[in-house]
Image (cartoon, rainbow, N blue to C red):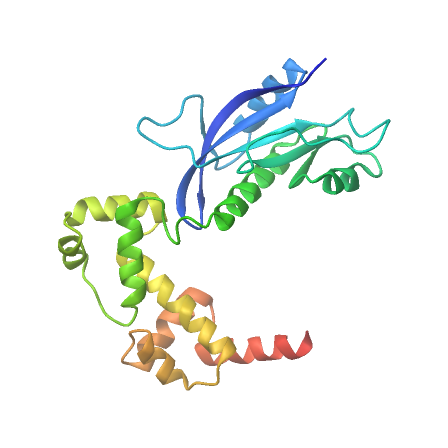
Length: 254
């Protein structure tokens, strides 16, 4: 019997671009697999799933689970179905020697072992969601135009303290709308997002340059080194000095 691609569920999760919505499908002639997948998804923790797409929302991509439990045996490798290149492909395999290798050799992004386990399904879906988001070249920060423009502006003005009200005025919106949109898309309000970006960029400078810590602090909007140290330790769990030292040691060891 020819396999048929069927819709299973929509789910939302946070990627590096913020909250994104994905569609999960299955390619199988086993109708019972649909019910098993849905029941397994309902047992996963921290996964926001629903039967219909969100009203007015967009589907960022789709993940297709291919039933390969009986398709890696016999003659040669499995031919990949002709599906949208933007999809992520996961092979559902039996836990037999060589099945995992066959899945990767055939071109699948990832695999799931049969019988399904909720923690494994959850981990695979999150991994593919985030991998897809990282590969998408169309947007640097967010698919929402307003958030994208605000993020780009704050990234360019990384050393400048910006209020939410001034940011809202610049982009012709109000601060409540901007805060709510940022929290939904990025998981953080605007100023917290900029602070996170500052610290992550500063950490990169600590890793790849020998610039004095006070200079790096000033370049990223911290006029007082003590304030930089406090914020950095809160975010990374180490002072800038200890972070640079540990990274240097790790590089030497590698």
